Length: 363
Image 1 (cartoon, rainbow, N blue to C red):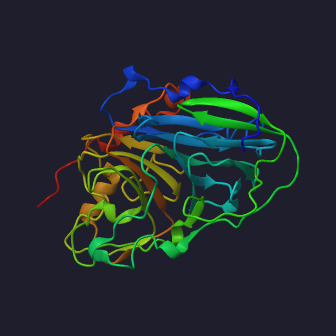
Image 2 (cartoon, helix red, strand yellow):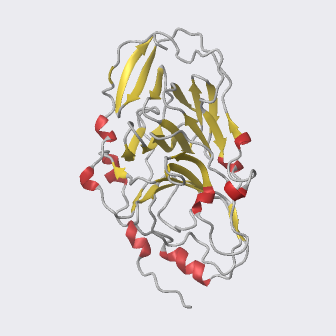
Image 3 (cartoon, rainbow, N blue to C red):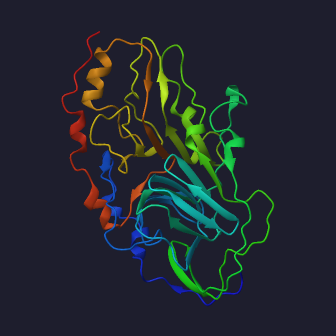
């Protein structure tokens, strides 16, 4: 891996997209429409769109991306010295070839690629869209299960690592490398996926979100949303996360005497939400697969008017929430918009209208 050309700036990508747009920071609830599939051939690297960020590669924080690609990475590989990449496909399957081997992922699965590891992505369909987060902080880990015990949430046995795959070909490659929020490129005279064997605990892995053992109440009220945490990047403060990756999958709703949708709240954590498939149970309209929403620290949020009206009037009986998979990147640091113009182009400027006309429940 030491045999490569000299790095030079990668000019095909607007580096300003990594920077904060300080004048656009505000406490409003925000929502965005999905990225459209590209009309021209665009691979994963050039299809990455940095949307939100906090912190710095020198300490902690993250960058939230959307991606939209229409071609495989040919003769190119990518790595980041800044953070681990967690990729969440929304549409289209991916074959991810890493220095450790190959992993195939589809919507409802995720992959985590540690910082510094080279990889390239091939599309297994005509196009692919999804989400990603680059984690500058501590590596992702399974959260502490506490009183839940050994059998709940994401089980370690369901995480899969690649089998070593050696590429002997001397095909030239271009290596695109992210370093301190800048992209650089270097020429390679060989295929970099040439690791013959590996061992240890620093490796890429995938996880099928359908295997998540969902925990919920079987009596009344709501447990804290932390029960939906798949992976967490901890901080030095116990219980405070740099980034949590949380999902809201299919599940039974059986609480009695309870307002069942996610309740209205404000909290210290900043929450970016995305939707992989179906409909999120707090929003009946406007929040669509491939889109996203942001509720920063202490910005109030909760169900839209239609969901509220239905929840306060329906007869409570066991109901299965089917055909849905939403997720959340939750951080103890405020998410700030980047200087990416796509952010403004996709914003739903009427998002707040979904709460207009809320009336007090009849007690």
